[in-house]
Structure formats: structure tokens, C-alpha cells
Image (cartoon, rainbow, N blue to C red; front, side, top):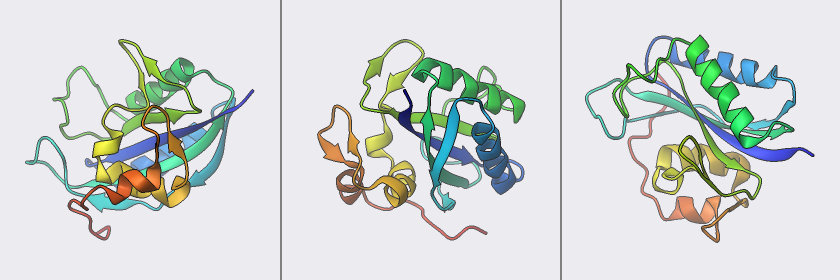
Length: 163
């Protein structure tokens, strides 16, 4: 049975738009994954480590017959293929590609390698804004609020048109 999953995409190094578009193509080409919707690509200020280039961010909605851990492994493989080495990068530092599994159906997971829903998505405007574009009425597991309701509680941070 296929589950609805939402994946955040971000990039602030190199050709950011190409990295995001290529990642979407690779995710879409993954057996057991079907692309349902894509948000627009937004340019935002970095969070955490401010002294770095601005990000491009987007969110996609997929249906997947892969389990959540299997889907995460595929996302990490795509990051690696795009030149990202998580072991060499500072936390919240610059990256060629960042793929985060935000939600997977109504599943809640707390494991050493995966937390669903994403533990900070409700605090991040740069995730909620593109997610609300494609799934505003989706209830976030464990929070008893929709994506749109969570977005209304946030202040836009560093949003700008893509340059």
C-alpha cells in the first residue's frame, strides 16, 4: 500500500536550482515512488549558521510503497550523489543538497536515524511555506494541527524572490 510522504529540498551551494530539480527527477525515477505535487522554489535566509549563502527551498508530495526508512536511505543516497558528505559538513552549514523526510502518512517514528514528523518542521517557515502551498489542509501527526495552521503561527523569515 502506498503512503503519502512529504520531502523538503534545499540547496545553497553551486547551481541551487539545478540541484533541486535534479533531486526531484531522481526521486521521481525511484521505483515505488510517484510524484504527486511540487511547490514553487523559494529563496530564503539560512537558519542556524547565518554566515553562508541564501538557500533555495521547495517541498514535494510523493506516494511511496517504500517504507519510511527505505525512503530515507534513498534520499541520503541522492544527497551523496549530489556531492553532499554529511560527515564533513557542519550542522546547519552550507550544502549542495539537503533532503528531509518531513512526514510519511500518519506515522510517528522516533529512532536514532529517523524522526517523523520532522522534529523542527513546525518551527521552520522555509519548510512550512512551500509545504502549505501543496498540503495546507494536511494534519501533522502528533501536533493536531494542519500545515496551514502551523504556517499561520510563523513569521516569514528571509523570504525573497529567487535571484
